[in-house]
Length: 342
Ligand code: KG4
Ligand code: ZN
Image (cartoon, rainbow, N blue to C red; front, top):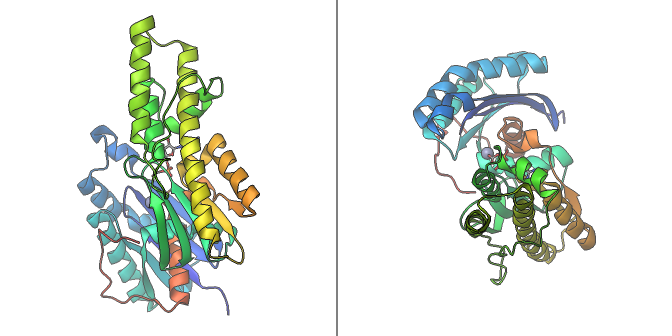
């Protein structure tokens, strides 16, 4: 059978995105960010996001088709994020997708945004089910065993901050530029990770749950003590604090990954594979540690490129294709679901 050509739409948070996929080939992937619209408010403002999505979706679709060199009539199906996310944006996407699908007389498929992220390693690396995934970004931190387009088991996750958030807060506390991950990693290169005793939270507790907010509190205490005793931070102090913090995050993620791998491998997957996805996967120390664990366990290690780990519509089109192949098309009653756990 010929691979379907699928138009994907994504508008659940602050990116308006459209993409055209044929099988696993990404013919185009357009992402229009809204960061500058929300910058003055210190967070995403739902009303502003909804209006921007409504204004930009048509344009994103137009550009995606143009870049793919595909006329609208050649689209075989339309996939759209139907949740979870901000209701206004999700509604705009769902309405737009319904309009296009109805106009073309082609299938419509509603996709869970988180499933889009979770299936990305199949799009980028062709992993077979089941695989183990660590989603680790500024907003997420969880282990998933992915068994099918609608079949996920969560092995554990953070009970407070996501690691990326902890990196960002650490950078802020030390006066380093945002996003914090890359600046903390760069500082840490010249640092001594052993100088400051950072905790390794929740390692004493069984399972794969994690906690990162205590690291930030520990860092704050160390910083203030240095300020008191020596009247401020020296460059070396900053580097040592960054190195100590990063090593603590690395150790927690590594130990929890070791446990998650053990649980996953107990079901004897035919082609064992691990994927790390999200902004924090860019960290060399963390990535290196997890890669080494996988090599030791005989598990294939993958890390999808960052542009496909952040919000995009290619992952939605891909997940839509898998759902259609499984006979899971939606109809015109498809509703936006602001809350929709995996
Ligand atoms: O996946 P992502 O781009 O977006 C969302 O969280 O939605 O992740 C961004 C996060 C930020 O918190 C950023 O500081 C972190 O990923 N990050 C890193 C690195 N590069 C980005 N964290 C640690 N080390 C890095 N090199
Ligand atoms: Zn997302």
